[in-house]
Image 1 (tube, rainbow, N blue to C red):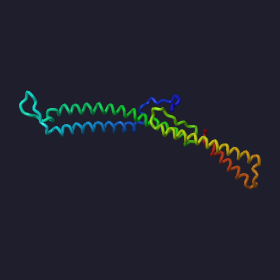
Image 2 (tube, helix red, strand yellow; image 1 turned 90 degrees about the horizontal axis):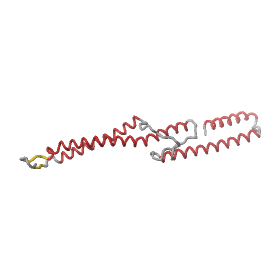
Image 3 (tube, rainbow, N blue to C red; image 1 turned 135 degrees about the vertical axis):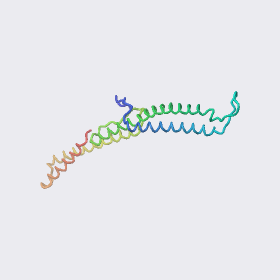
Image 4 (cartoon, rainbow, N blue to C red; image 1 turned 120 degrees about the vertical axis):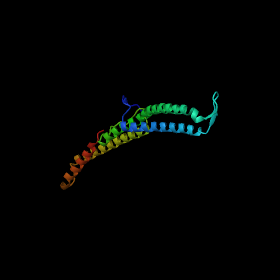
Length: 188
């Protein structure tokens, strides 16, 4: 669904959520990289090798430990940066539409039934967007039906000059005014 000219250009739309989201993913990458490096060093601590040109043997951990450590740090930093950027883009695709839909729902809560929940095709939450748009359309249809029924009843009663016992005329008028007022709360 296209959003008729609506485009978000701001990638950080909910700072607290997005920072937490990105930090958690980056931390997972860094911790995983450290664990892999530690596992490699731990598993190679008992392995020995003979190096040509040197007398004696040395452990693989002593020989390759600094290189492994340096590689793990470089891979962790590069991976964390890549995951951070991807997390920012992914969180933007989730939280952006959620914030937009929340604002539309708030407008509906204030009586505006002419809300549009369409979001960009590339955004996540398409199913929710379609369901909310359908709900809004259904509310508009039901409101229109209620409005027509109200108008028909009001017209009928006016034709009959509210033909009820005099003691009940004002009560009937008050009820119809209250009904009309409730209908007028909604804006379509």
